[in-house]
Image 1 (cartoon, rainbow, N blue to C red):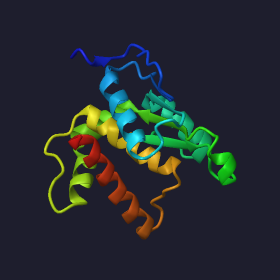
Image 2 (cartoon, rainbow, N blue to C red; image 1 turned 30 degrees about the vertical axis):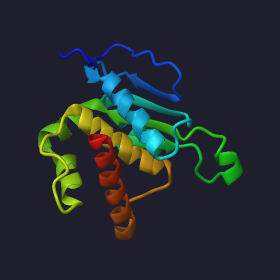
Image 3 (cartoon, rainbow, N blue to C red; image 1 turned 90 degrees about the horizontal axis):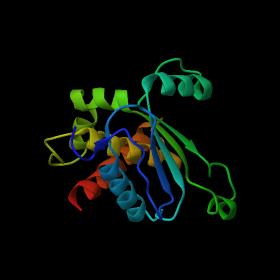
Image 4 (cartoon, helix red, strand yellow; image 1 turned 90 degrees about the vertical axis):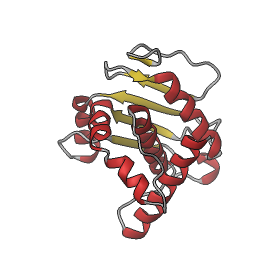
Length: 175
């Protein structure tokens, strides 16, 4: 286990972004927190509250069953708090909550599914390697897009969302 990998709580001060590791697995918490801060500053949401919970397949399966009536684990779930709110009210609310299955993220690292998806969106590959940190970052990006109202149900929506995923991942990896 590297110095950055931990399953211990990470105390962060002066940040409205909470990241909690409830998975029991070692996760690069400090590096992930730095990337989340960088992402939210980049998209103009640096002062907005968001809660990210890193969890297990079992826990995310229960959430998926409760909120989407799908009785299986998934990689990430987003719970937007601004949806359907008046813009004036919405700007005062937290962005929302995110649940990420670390176990599923680890499987995605091994399969290179999201790395390949990000690489396929541009003229040149974005990266040759893909770590757990990269996968968790990608899932935060994907879920943040959902919190901001993006979707991928229709082909045109999916195209826009995939372009944003690559753009934001490129920013994180290259800055």
